[in-house]
Length: 109
Image: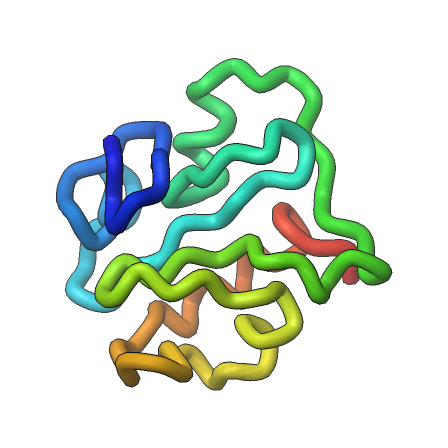
């Protein structure tokens, strides 16, 4: 699905990147996966895509834009996202703080 000018793959349900797995009001980010350079709403959507080579973003590349705010379309660097306190720095839309539980699936810890 094309969302705010970015292709987001997976079980996307709406224009704010909610998916079949995570669809609360605050589930509004997509993550560009390091292994396939593609945005997905969540790790489950990525697994279902059949990438077959999951890998996490290395710390030395945390300055890369890899998080898409589904509310305004702003791309955050990984560092910006990790420091944003679950809120878009541009539009102030809230992100799901529970995503912190899955950081190890996306980023080198």
